[in-house]
Length: 100
Image (cartoon, rainbow, N blue to C red; front, side, top):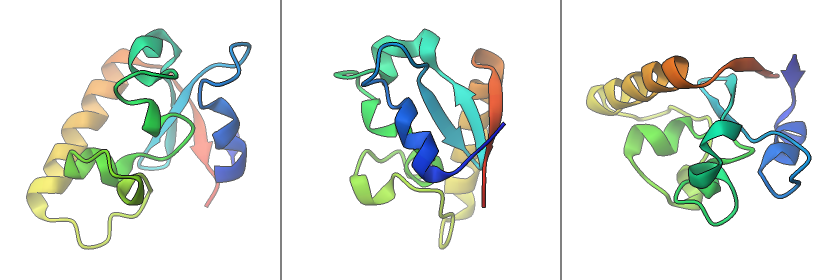
């Protein structure tokens, strides 16, 4: 399944009938089982329905960092992102990709 960033926004947890998706490096993960974290009111709710690559790399919850851009990230930040990616792969199913 390929989703545009606009379509991805529909899976932000605000509609209880839909799963919750978070994208990481262009791959879309179904994080519905982590609803307490990614659902409305959760500690990581700002990542739901978006590509959170930059924010996860920077360990940031700032709105401007919740995007797919990896421009200007340090080697250390890329390493942090790769660690997050491994965690997501181990925990959540991949359901698609973000259309570029």
